[in-house]
Length: 91
Ligand SMILES: [Zn+2]
Image (cartoon, rainbow, N blue to C red; front, top):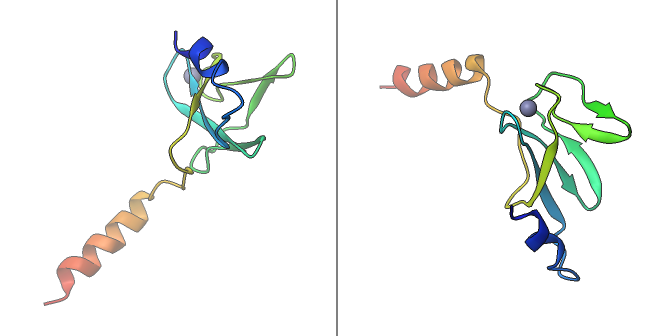
């Protein structure tokens, strides 16, 4: 596991962490400046078990990894469609 290695890297703590589910692998959210930020494209409520954050999809434990960039809301199907229409309509 890489978790231990990450913990020992202090005091160079990154300000951004990804929280991945150990069971289903989904990115549940991020820690940004010590604050949990839920995945903006996830519509499920955040789960907490005994004060611990859990995967909102399957309830699995979360693995903290240094994050690269902030999550943004996924493009919806509707947005994708309007984008494509705009792209191909213009001639
Ligand atoms: Zn999960």
